[in-house]
Image (cartoon, rainbow, N blue to C red; front, top):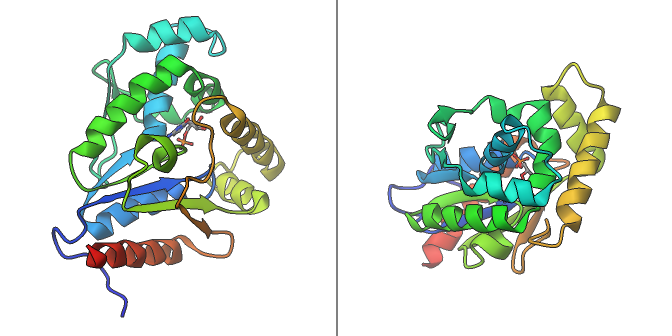
Length: 230
Ligand code: C5P
């Protein structure tokens, strides 16, 4: 029997949701957290905030040393309420700025810097340790929290991912968006540290033929079944 929502306190673990862009990951993660009545962590928002700091400082995002120095000095705060997402950089709300095309274009090289990952992964682990949560990113199940009770790797065909992203950005063609996604995925998958990949034990869910509601439903039932097994 399927159930709409978890009972309060029913799911007490961690869901690690990883995958490339355009799979519906963020929307799915947020809605799943709401259904389970737990917190939500968008680790991509943290790497994006670090990127905004780098761009604001006028640093070349591919200059690893300068990037590392800059990110060592900043304070990033993210809300873990799935209904109110907010990202704060050094006391300043950057919730909108982290989504600009400039930040999106520069985020992959910034997030490939070892010192950046070390700092942000430590902060992510602290946040996750604070209680039940759905955490999404590229390396949650493989590096940040390998002991997650439920690990999922979301995928979708390249074409579907590009179409979904293009629908969110009406001023860009599907071809342009597909190229940008491919560049970012190639960078994220081939970097030396914590590359994007399916974690050991992660269930692969292909969302090409599913709508968001179906994916949320599927994962809610998977999480509740994990919870019932204790
Ligand atoms: O999920 P989102 O598209 O906002 O992530 C932006 C970028 O942040 C990714 O393309 C990737 O370079 C980086 N990222 C990462 N590790 C994570 C989450 C995001 O390297 N756990």
